[in-house]
Image (cartoon, rainbow, N blue to C red; front, side):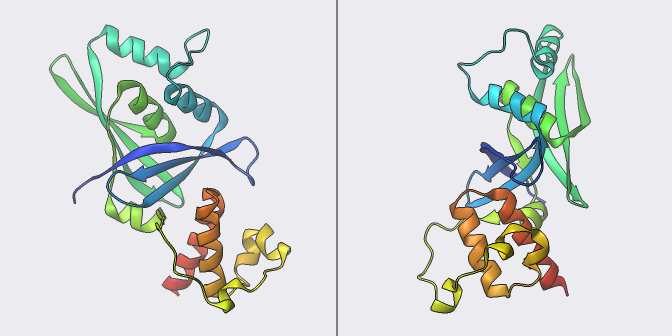
Length: 199
């Protein structure tokens, strides 16, 4: 199974989980995006790595690890988001140094924070993108009137209400959520569509 390279698009604040953010990754040669919910500390660390002009007054944990690894001539070669189980992403950090190569199990948020600091590529597999990726279309054909039916605000507010909507309404909401870069909402809608396709 060939790995697919990803790049970090950015971070968005979670509307539903207090203190959480959505880390958004994009396939390098495609339109799919992969939203991953992460904590505040990891989001801050990733944001600092993305903003190269910004440096904290004291090193953060990921910066300290980078300095430590540099001191011992160790580098991160790549990060692989290799598994998705029960809505949780798992990652491997592939590192080398002193003539040895190792693979370290890591939380995806930590692995991405380290990959950014080491300028290491980030990969995943097709099955993960198929399962959790959101397709970002360049242009959408003009939708039918039925897709443009107004939806009650209550139906938009809760993931439980997604179950009461028709599939075509969900697809319309998914398109809107992706267009508005509300990846957390898009992920919830995608999960409901996946649940229906399996039944």
